[in-house]
Amino acid sequence: MSSIVVLIGVSGSGKSTLAKRSKERAESDPVKTIICSTDSFIDEEAEKLGKTYQEMMKQLQETKTFGTLTGRFYDEIEDGIKKDYNIIIDRTNLSRGGRMALLEKLKEMHKKHDKTMESMAVCLKLTREQLDRFLSKRIEEGGKTIPSEILENQMKNLEIPVKEEGFDRVEVYEPA
Image 1 (cartoon, rainbow, N blue to C red):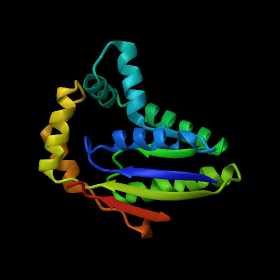
Image 2 (image 1 turned 120 degrees about the vertical axis):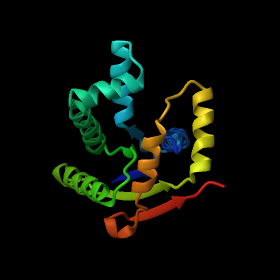
Image 3 (image 1 turned 180 degrees about the horizontal axis):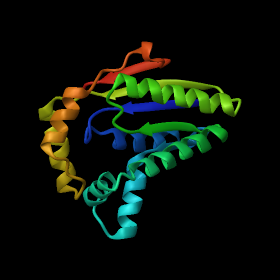
Image 4 (image 1 turned 135 degrees about the vertical axis):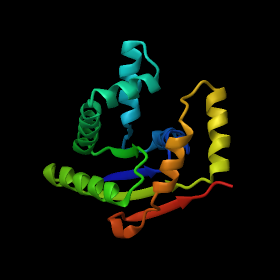
């Protein structure tokens, strides 16, 4: 049985940091843990082409080729399912409908490979002030910048997960 953790939160809320820390803590577990993220594919493509993350994302949107990376993302998840890995899904996952579709796809993949899964939603719910502090630190460390209008839109559209979406467990963190 694989354990699937779906991280939920606006861009810059700490999902990738949490994913990395969780994976590090799981190093001694007998079951391997992997992180699946479309950002890793965007970073990889940007590096190949000598572009920044923002430039690469803009190109993917303009050329309508983001779907190719999404396909690679799902292939990586399916490969992890086949190998019985624990999987941390690191995406914004803001909407209930999107998460329910993701869970349905995950269940189909597990069924296809005669596997079972346990799913958990972990939502990072930050205030705008907390988010701005996180992002300031990220920028100081040379990380990605996120336009303010995108953050405002994501914060407005974030729907807090509930078990009725199909998760076995739901945890919501509101950092102090």
